[in-house]
Length: 118
Image 1: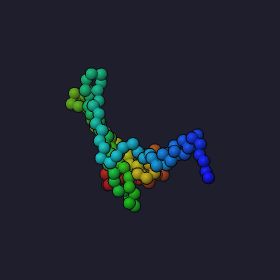
Image 2: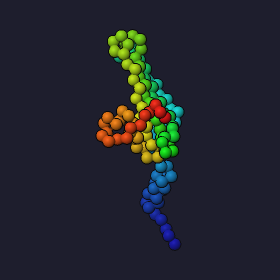
Image 3: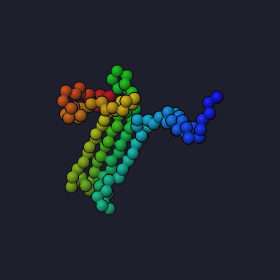
Image 4: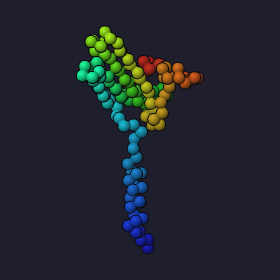
């Protein structure tokens, strides 16, 4: 008959909880949108958004496209106009980034993908 002491039972429970509650690779979900108000001191300078979208990529790869948009308001446009869009694609299963057009400048020999063709 197997008798378990209290000291050996607690690590077993902890191990079981770790296996059951395997965390996701990402801390966000499809469709999530974050909006930020950009300020320079007390003066509003613009707005930035971060949008997560689940997509089906080439060869039926399930992926996330994460898009960041930033723009200054009319007042700050006179000082320094900003209209930025940056997008990255990550494989949903592995969490690894798929090289895109902008990333290919940093990664010699990387295959080019057009983000707007998706």
